Length: 399
Ligand SMILES: [Fe+2]
Image (cartoon, rainbow, N blue to C red; front, side):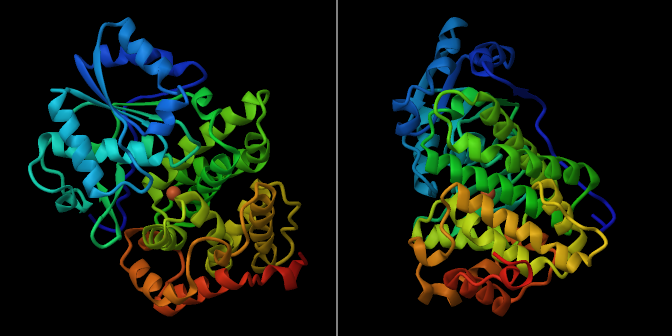
């Protein structure tokens, strides 16, 4: 592929809206499936979030088995367990329902349904030889956007490193996004996953591989998250509109980064999560404003756009290199309002790992989208500031 060619993958079908989960059965039937493996975790199952999905499978007379062994940051071991459950159930369709971990496990297990070998053999881009079974992906957080992407992240249980597997064969046959399913998530989960949405959108918007369609989706996603995340996190049984807006922002941001790629925030958060178990969205939320400050000199106009999308009153007659800091401050204020700590020191991450984390982040595929050239010392410097809580915007704009 030459540099001038651009690729953008999206799923065949995205069904969006309140009540969409009740339509699951009729689509599964359309795909000719008779036995479904539902891939999820015990929390989603216990909260009753599966109910509308499995009821609709019952309604059309499709059999199903539930594998609820998904854990946060799923490992190759969990993926192989899910694949064994698929085989044991003699299933012919994979239905992943849950947060990013459940959806990624479902995608990775679907590789093993039709391809021999170990799941990490398929690491990288385009290394899955055989077509995978039909898949229906149903997010219950807003969210990773994994339901509309062709990537899955699998942690190597031995090394603790998160590996990325990407292939168009992993795109859902149906992404089914029902905002009602996100209602029961605890506030801290809504906050972290919502900031993951913001991170996807910001990284896609400034990525070196951005395209007009990914930028359009990304900017609108930033606007929706800025206007709705606070209310979605504070949801107490009344604000369906905020949940719906966040679900849409999540799916849009997922589509955006699936075409544009990500950047240094994800390259770092994958390592912080892999080494210390810091939840993905939380790690991103803490690191995002520090990386935005690092990238700002390279993409000042884009940062002004981000600030504006977040409701900042920007003055375009000022230099973008100054006004762009409004985006950093607005992201940090949003994070403050939803209870995200300001520093990595307040998470399970440890400062003496900075060198190792920076080393590993250099090898992470996400880094290839970052707009500013980034070496080991740059990444270590970003982590250093993120442990200390040092921001440049405070001296430029005031806190
Ligand atoms: Fe993410």
